[in-house]
Amino acid sequence: MAKKYRIAILASGSGTNAANLFSYFQHHPTIEVVLLLSNNPAAFALERARQAGIEAKVFDRQQFRDTPEVVRWLQERGVTHVVLAGFLWLIPTSLIQAYPDRIVNIHPALLPAYGGKGMYGMNVHTAVKQAGEAETGITIHAVNEHYDEGTILFQARCVLTPDDTPEAIAVKVHALEYEHYPPQIERWVLGDKEND
Image (tube, rainbow, N blue to C red; front, top):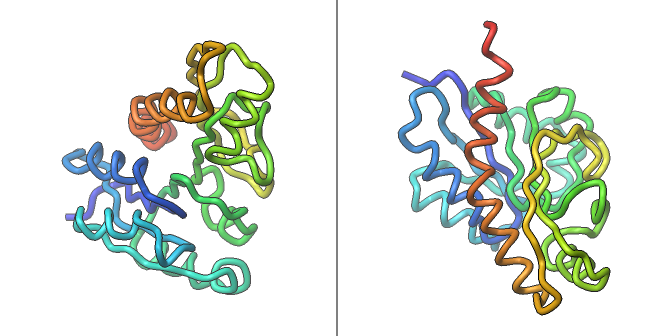
């Protein structure tokens, strides 16, 4: 029997957060990951999905922005929620309209700082280092038509030292991602259904 809530993950890169989500929800009573989509045919996230027995598909920019194809894939598989895990493209209005308040992203900084176009991965950690910040962290937020501007759902922080390199900052932030993203997605998915 299909589980009540069905997640699709969008990823552009290696897929470490995606793999963490596969594992977290593998035996969940009501939530399952049913699909991984990527805009990058070389993304290792696709291989991680296949290894986990999860369907994986690739799309190009035209399919994503100019056709209803990606939305149709989601709907055909009964997807109820969409999770971005290192996905680098802006989400088109058609997808936001198909899944209003049902798309979530994780950002490797404390928004609204260090957000916006081009602010991802090591670009963020390098900017945080150059600014001499004493702390950074993660932000889990709802997705809208603008980069990193949706409603903030959760933040977690970590302390930085003057000796931390951008690479060391990345390690600290990844640890927060792995710890918090799966349970926060679980709360997000189940929380908006508590009164059904």
